Length: 139
Image (cartoon, rainbow, N blue to C red):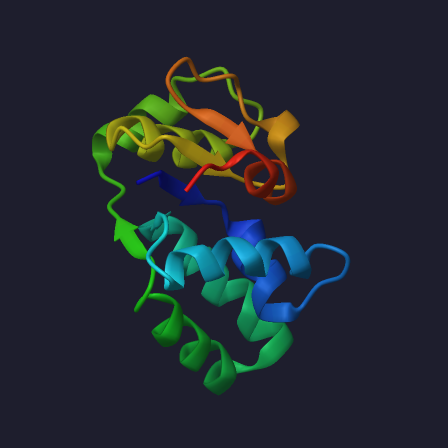
């Protein structure tokens, strides 16, 4: 079973039903709900998701969404080593560097993000958009 890290932007697309991204992003989440993939987010992504969604959807709606989300997506820790590795990396975006290091540290197969160009090519991990993931996954 594929083990995937779902980037913050994908979760926000789902929660806000953001067009044109909602359709493919929600299909990725559906695969996790159906148990066809094992999906993860980083602990730091959860705090980012809550922060972003509370501005758009309010606290009550956001907390309900996140409670439902964590029933189907596992949360991976962010520790000092991951932060130091991200700080010492040559990635342009620190948040992406943290996500990449979480995926590496946990030997995940794929990172699903809309910002594929912002992720440094990782030798052991594919970086795919939701549409490319859906087109290429074999379950």
